[in-house]
Image (cartoon, rainbow, N blue to C red; front, side, top):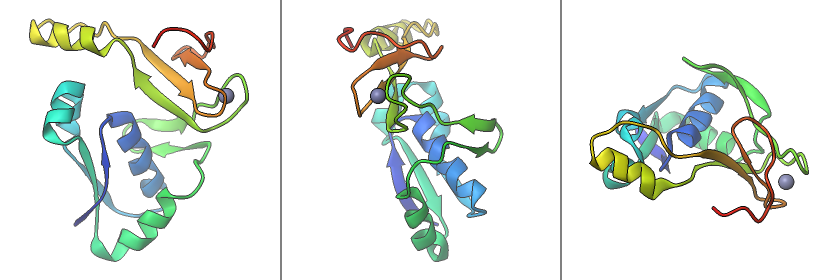
Length: 142
Ligand SMILES: [Zn+2]
């Protein structure tokens, strides 16, 4: 197996894996258990690696550089609905976890409470909105 991509965050890695799974390209995520522990360990361990067979690397690479599909099946999760910007309908959005220093602090204290806020950000118009799909003001503090 060869490493095709590196991901810092698990959602992005699962997105890419789902994309390859839907095209029947066998792939493996290495390090996803580490990432589940938290972003700090993810950074420390180099994030998640997406590995494919060398013979599939070209096809997989081509697939991942194509435009983002709006919806597909993710193994173990089910249908994945690619979120789109509620403001301009762009699919060019990124999932991010805000308040990361706070998240790090609770992990350091060994209190596994997810206090961080999950939010999406649109690269086309800079709108941010939370996971419930309600858009927030573009100038909200990150
Ligand atoms: Zn937008």
